[in-house]
Length: 449
Image (tube, rainbow, N blue to C red; front, top):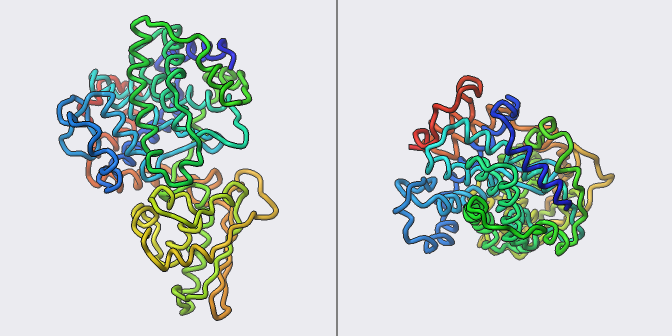
């Protein structure tokens, strides 16, 4: 990538005044922050998450920053941000972007939350930094196009997104923020997306490590330590990406990426949502007709978009593999009628009926392929052993570009995941006091505690 474009992006963000972020963008960022925090709270007691993070930090009760969902646990800013980022990612419920392979919320929000609690910064500073950090992250992601083997975004963009956000909270000037991002690029650790599809639970930790590294990258830049001048360009060269420098600089302050983000309610890969909704519609209809869903001869034919055809793993051994296996997700939904986080994760990994049904599910491309906003549509046909069948098509699952969650949906999701924890903070983020004006007097620390 042209270093001038990165420098220009940093200069713009560092110079942005508090009123540079439009009111609708600020409100959307508030919802992103609430969603990220709620997802972390919802996963905090997950058995797999606890097992994978139990021994990582023996001093988790000795710091100053909140570890979400862990009672009175406190940690240093970097460690708290790492834990919260991993938890927010664990259930595959966090927000994302309709056009970019990027989940900027879980990079920017955990870093900002820890920094603001440690430094006793206000809600206005938090939202301003997250809004600009989110925008910078998405523009960097938009500037890179990968070939046939994409890099997982968390391993690539988490350090950069968190560093941008921290640099803004620490009021770095444009040149120093640029140095911080070059430090972040030199520590980015791109890893293959295929590890996620294979179910490698270690992949859930990538985002946390990236976010934690951002604290050191920001401090190095602020301390005057020089970063490799071509760090981001060299990273792109290694990965063989095509770059578009204009994506970093076009219409800064006018076009905001968060306006094209999505929120979701199903705790699994978004590519599966349309097929799940169609299947559940058929299930409801056939049950109403007195049919037996446990029919041993059932066959399920799912026509899905091209990328989803590859999500056909049948040897499913971990919750992450489950959330990215369309045969597993459909088998669980058909046999048990459940789509909650436990059901679509670890609950039915050892279920023999689910394992058998996975083998009777065929994925094939939906023809004709549909353009956005219906590009993830699905058509599902279920045929029972006795010959009875049902078919349903879902053009736009809930949370898609054509059927977005509204503010009430997002609030219900967040408050349900929170289960009574940190509701003062969540309600403030979901409905910004004073319409988003004069937020400086409201401290993140007081809202958290």
